[in-house]
Length: 307
Image 1: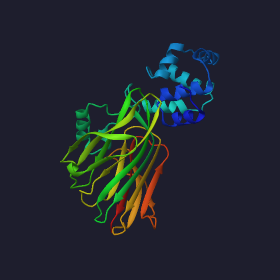
Image 2: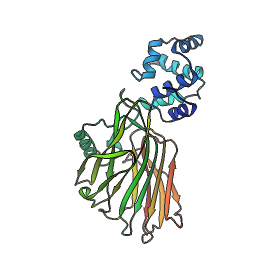
Image 3: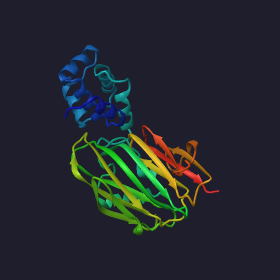
Image 4: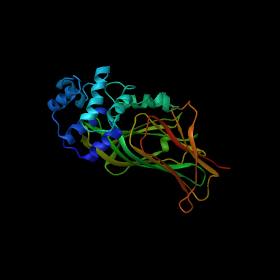
């Protein structure tokens, strides 16, 4: 697959390491033997087989001499310093079959239920996808309830054959997941849906119209119609893996406007909230939003006070 400079920039931003390396080799037009020669000229010895395994994702540089070779690759391929090493730093917290991430246990209070529902669907937790961009719109109703949420999502596959995405919804206290409607928008359709009545957690399988190859991107839309829970006071999203841009917009009904709104971040559900800042409610559209250009594993959210 031929890559453009834009593809390379995106791959260096979102990873994973092997796709970024593959894109860099493609854009620079350097065969592996030539790369090995350039590295040898810098006193770095690495085999062509190792380089091939690295770009395929079959192996990952881990030993000190291998990490030195990665820094040499950044120079040979004309990449920004630490652009490849950074992706490996993320990867050290994950196993060799998926990108960097944290377990749902550190991100979702009902993590055991989420894991159980996903296990029942027999789908890998990471799903084989990285987020390139995600715009999420939250609607708060006149009774201060979470009416629904809509997502426009762009993902990139990091292995061949990916054809679905698992969307997770957790309503506010009192939510009845059996009454929550899953809406599949463009480029996907609803597959299996599982929920847990005690925690209000719902997991929906969204089926793509095609099977993706490693490195391919896919855009799809989906949403949840809720309105079954009590007053809503915040919306949070947990990120198990590093990704691209995330935009969260919360819109309020004109009959239920909050007194104050704030954005925040957390490393996990039990950690202190950091990066808190005030958000000003827009006039005509009655909404607030946050934008995160390069998502890291952890939690982002917006909370609000009713009085």
